[in-house]
Image (cartoon, rainbow, N blue to C red):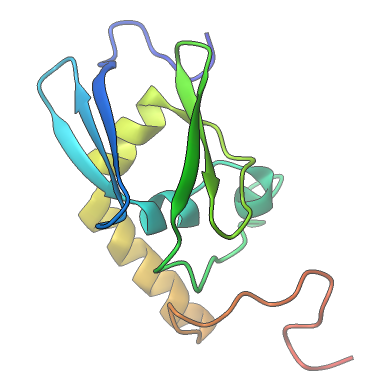
Length: 137
């Protein structure tokens, strides 16, 4: 089954904390993670964020205040969130959520490096789709 490794921890509880903007997940191995909505949004597994292959990732900015409007189950192996910026195409497997929770510090550091390399601020608005972000024609 896609996104679920044999013997991998599965969620025992999932709580959406709207005010603090975190998804709290308790797993079968006893691990409990509080994953910020922003982290989920910038690391969404969707093609819109990840591209269609290595090196095609789209750096996400302006997501600090993103909210989780809806969270739908996908079979018994994942959830599909709808974010306040309209993004709803990412399917988060239990394995991915566990990884996001366990590696938060590393993922935030990686995100900060990518922002610095691109010369953009975390709170910069995303460029318009189809627009020219570089300013040249």
